[in-house]
Each structure stands twice: as C-alpha cells, then as structure tokens.
Length: 354
Picture 1 (cartoon, one colour):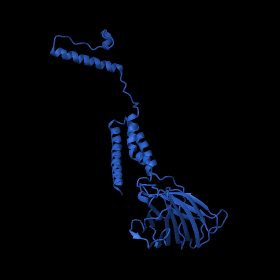
Picture 2 (cartoon, one colour):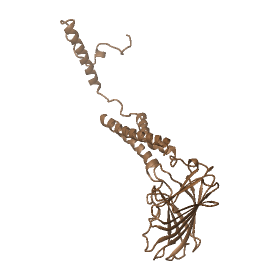
Picture 3 (cartoon, helix red, strand yellow):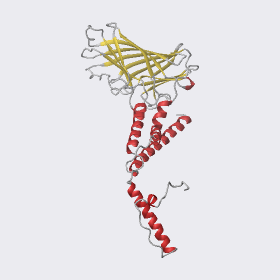
C-alpha cells in the first residue's frame, strides 16, 4: 500500500473513533437531560444506522441465488483454459474453456463462481457481458446471480440445458464462458486478474492461461494461492504475450498480474466504492448530530400557575422590605402580602414610565 493509502486509512480510523465518541455523547446527553431529547437522539442515530448499513456494511442485494448442491462422487475439473486479453481502455476480455467431469450422476445445471469483489475497500472487479454455452447440447440457458448474502462477494453463473432437453449425462462435458472484467487496471498499467480465486470447491487438475494485450506486457507474475509467494510452474513469453500453466491447482486459486504500458487506469486502492459512499458511512453520526441540533425543541417552557407566580413575587417583595427594615428603619411596619401587588397598588405595565 502506498503512503497515500496509509494516510487515508489512518484518517478513516480516526474518524470512526470520533464517530463512536459522538454516539456516546448522544446517549449521555439524552440521559443527563432527563430524556427530553431522547426521541430526537434515537431518530438521529437511526438515520445514521440506515446510512451506514445501506452504503457501507450490507451486501449489494438480498438473497436470491441458489445454493450449490453437494458434489457427486468423482466430480472434478480436468482442464481449465483461460484466454485473457487486455484492451487499451483497461477492460479485460476473458474466455474460459472448462472440461468438467460430473462424476457418477447426471446434472441439470453447471455452476461457476467468479470472484468479483475483493472485499471491503479491497481490489475488486466488475463482471459484465456474460455469455456461456455448452458444446453438447446447444444452445443453453445462462443466468447470472450478482453478489448477495448466499455467496458473499462472488458472482454465480448458472448454465442449464435447453428447456425440454434431458439433463447432462454423467461424465465429461465442455463449457465455454465469456465475459468482460472492468475495474482491474491500476496505475502504472498494472492488471490483476484472479481466474481461479478460491471459487472452486474441488481442485483443478490442469490449468493453462494466455495473457495478451493491445500492447506487450513488460512483466507478468503468476502466483499459486493467495499471498503464498509460490509461482506457477510455467511462465513463458511468446510472440503475442505470456503463457501460463500449472498442474494440481489448489482450492486457494491462482492470481495473475501483468504490467501493460499505455493502458487506461480504471481503479485505485480506494475506488471500489464511490467516495460518496465512504463519506456518508464515516460521517453518518456527524450528520445525525446536525439533525439533532437543527430539529426544533417542541417541549417549550413549563407552564406555571399565575397565582403561584404572583405569590412568589409578593414573597420577594416581603423579603426585600424586611431586609430594609433590619438595616435602615426598624420602626417601619411590615408590608402586607397582596394577592396582586401591581393591581392593588395602582401599578401599570412594567417599564411604561407612568
């Protein structure tokens, strides 16, 4: 991570801690004021929670994608070929050819899970223009399920035989999936693609990939597993690009990185969600504080009995007169307490000058 990234992370941590302090102040203020502002505080905190939950914490969609069935005996991936071409606009065209063995029982659907989101503020990609078919029978029905509660940040692609056709028989079948990956090109022309990113539930026997582009890559790396440092068995340059190969791919997957000069930069470390989303999520308690302060206080002053107010005034006058009696003239008689001193003494409006 760059220095700018560390600075941004530090600021976010500071703001989150400050937000927690604001929430504590909300609760403390509501309790100390004998719950006069409790409703207002709860409404403000509720709005803040909605902002944070909708913009920052929740997955993009509710559930809806089907759960994957249990694996059949002998089910495996025999061969996995991936052709990746990096365009000048930063979009990567991907074509997958999968030789899949369904094992001992026939299947009505073939599922492919693609890692399409790197997680909270991580490196991710956007999946678009998905097309898929099976060699036998053809054509097929393709349905794409976007990330949801069922499969987290992964996109599920379901390939089914045509309506009215029998299920795919047991044994081997070939599937071809084509799609576009956007938001995978970083500054300095770096491209990161995870063709096998832990999305398979069983190992892949043989993996082969080609990485090409409108410009020749200056450097290509192929890592087996996530942050393991283990390189692919074959990394070979040819006239069009780079060829990669690996046997017995683990379930942790393979990550391919290439550096292509001159391609368009489409993502940075903090571009996965828009700056507006992060601003709303971090400053939500501050927004609720503004709402709390701007909301009118409808409680108003407490109403008191006028007779009690007058009696209090009379008592004040009596105490004042008594004080004068003690210090100035002990012979002055006591001033009687009047029901309405201003009316009985002939007084007018206060400050009238008459």
